[in-house]
Image (tube, rainbow, N blue to C red):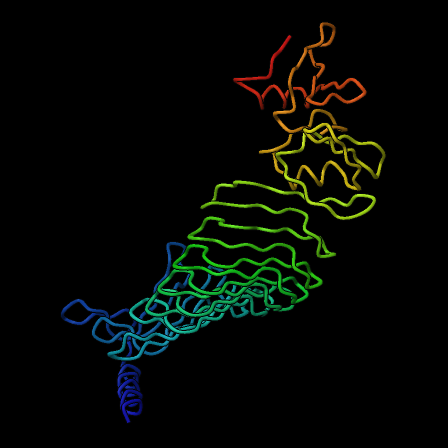
Length: 346
């Protein structure tokens, strides 16, 4: 009954306007009244619609500079609710939803210029609440889901590969990462997992290869790493080694490395220096040259060349059977890394 009365009220007002319509009128109090059209400085129509007692009522049309409709909004008398549909400049739908007291409210849908759904959001009086979704622009494949509470990320968050396979699953607690974190390969196998505590990594974090073997194990205390183990394939088995026990790696063949431990023992592994450097990070190891990756404390001396200013000899803990040189960008990186306290120079 209330909706019927509202409809009749709007209809009566619009009918009274149509009987004697003059553009851009105001009443004796200076309030907008009747049918209005507003133009910009270039005399292009910006919007048109009816006012009653200074307030918009019924359908309003807003325009792009090219003359096409930008926005269609419907205002109801004595109501804070405005339903809106927005359009791209090419005429396709851009967004649709409801405003409550000029704030987004309820479900909003967004589309690209080809008409594909690209996003979905839920609001409560201007703040994101509930589930939001992001879709691919080509096929509207779900790429991301976020739960919100009063404008803050809260609860499960997940994102997906373009194939639809799960990529990441994690949790938020009032905009802070909190709880379990899991990341997956596109084939569905676990890539890494760990736990966040109020935005900080905490406890054990593990990275896996696609065979399920542990590539890297890290231990954190409120965001500070306390220890790390790296996984390697040896001729006999998969092993895990504490990075603090490793002196350096050097390339033996195109497919094998020698891992020199600080206790003077060596292990042959099937790996490559670039993969190890990405796993271990610059906090633990540094390239001496393209064939040798060393821990910082295994570098005992850097002896600059007397003939070439861009070259130096490097003395390592547990010296290999060959001389080690650094040069060019590797040399500059070493000097920069050890500044202001480099290892002993001669």
